[in-house]
Length: 175
Image 1 (cartoon, rainbow, N blue to C red):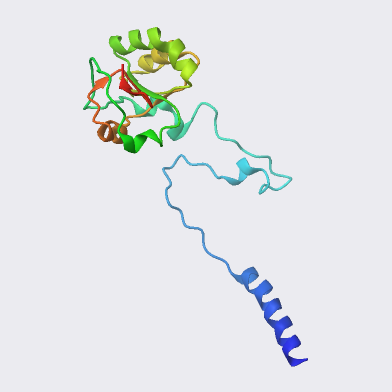
Image 2 (cartoon, rainbow, N blue to C red):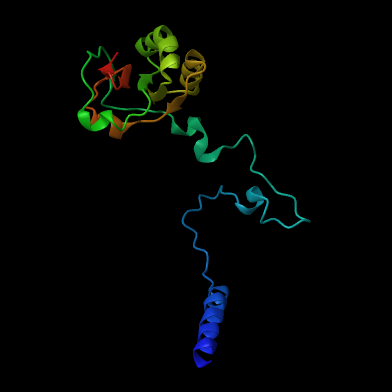
C-alpha cells in the first residue's frame, strides 16, 4: 500500500513540476525592424485582436536588393574545361547547380543552356550582380529556373572554381 501511494505521489509530481517551470524569453537579435511572431501564427492571437502581418513591400533580410552589390571576388567570367567532380561531393550532390553572374558571358550561356538546365532540374546561384537591374535581367533570362542570389564562397573554395558561368553536376564541373 505504501509503495502504491509513493508511486502516485511521484507520478503527480512528474506532471505538476513542469507546469511551474518558466523561463524568461531572451532576445537574440532585434534590428529595429522585427515583427512579433505570434500574429503570424494565428494560434497565439486573441480573438479580439486581428493578426498584423508585416508590410508586403518590406521583405527584410529576404529582400534580394539588400544583398547588392553581390560579389564573389575569386570568380571572373571565363572558360571552364570539363573536370571531374571531387569524389567527396559526388554522393552529396542531389541536383545540378550552376553559377552565373550578370556579365554578358553568363547571360549568353544561360540563354543557350536554359532548356538543358530546366530538363536537369538545376538550381542556379547568381554570384555576381551590381544593381537591381542585374537581378531582374538574370531572373528574366532564367525564366522558370530557380536562381538565387548568393556569394557561394564556400562552394567556390571547396571546388576551386575560378570562372563563371559553370555547371556542377555528377558528370563533373563544366561550362
